[in-house]
Image (cartoon, rainbow, N blue to C red; front, side, top):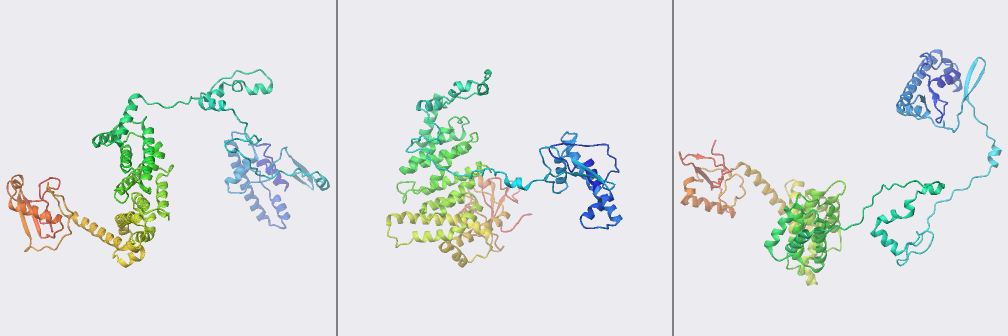
Length: 584
């Protein structure tokens, strides 16, 4: 035990104190370590007498190795701290580095040295523990009990008047408040600010005060005369009755790179215009204001993120407001809601970041409107329009679970027994528009989520009265996707006067019933021949949905009059629908 404590004192200083550094002897011999006698003493202390000599030797070598590793790691922390004396903190860090629990309790304000004792041929180093008198400890006066935390309420102001109580700050005069609000630099001109407070407290000579803080004066941002005139002309043109002038103004808002100084006023103009005209049910002005928002979003030189707090509420109001026009059963306010929904989706796409979470907050706003029990159907329509513009994932999460509830509300609105005729006409139109919008937006999502075949009973059971139109919409979407995939094998060429129809799926070929029209390019440039007129007539029939699958058209060249495949990038005048590839 004596050897162990002596070795510990030489190598790691386990009895040291954190407040007092330990001298490190860099010339310690390699033979220093824990002796076998120390291991035997520790074993006797633990109740294991008669430990074999080999076991003591192995334990001695292992303990010596571990202590040397600990000392070397502690020395590394000492070196990194640019010190020549090792602290107990270095030992603790070394223990933590090896995944061991650090030593606790080795802290004291004064240095506690080792005591030395010898006897029986052995030397022992130990720490002297002070004896504590229990009678003195019991009879000492107890310290004061700390005060428990408590809360005390007081009036900050009563009817706009601050009461004169110690908890409130001392009141200031009205003139002082006006001076502080108009001239913030007035406080720096006072005597307290100019004097050095430290010198006043110590009674010494005042030191020279050097002013290092520059406070800018409060000044309103003014526009030049030209900018004021431009702002007036732009706003009047955008909400005026002259459509060509409005188109020029919107084009200027979308392309002019010098609108930075007027952007705050334009955003305020749009926000205030929406707030006023929603109350007055002025649909035309609301549409013009949303067109201004669209032009500002298209301007790539403007930084709109600082003004979204005014634009987003204005756009959201045009989406989910209860009433936007004076005659909601006749005016087409649905187009305004759809247009504003597209504007909101563009804002979320362009300005959403992980910091502002614009799309998350907008989605929550629409979702709350959709979950509301007291909202009218027009607000439900706006919420659905806003959510479906944000993508199929939003539709899957926020619209699909509420289709059955919306179906019940639609059935209640379309009920002929409704006694409120004035509300019934508006609600019926809203219910029909909601049904159309749901079928249009939800059908592609259901097509990707569900595997064919689609059974109408499952749709009715899950979606209520909307099951049948959704089933029809999903089937139509599957047919359109099949037609598009089969039309990739065809080679289309457009007629100048006709719209290119969607390519039909290939039909079984029958050579005996096919009609082949050979058209010369010279005939296309001059007067149309009878064959070309028949081809155009067949193209019109295909556009009208008339089945004419057994038709093939071939375009001849000018010279050798041999068939060739038409180039789809050239407008040669005839659309060729090949049921099979006739040319190599």
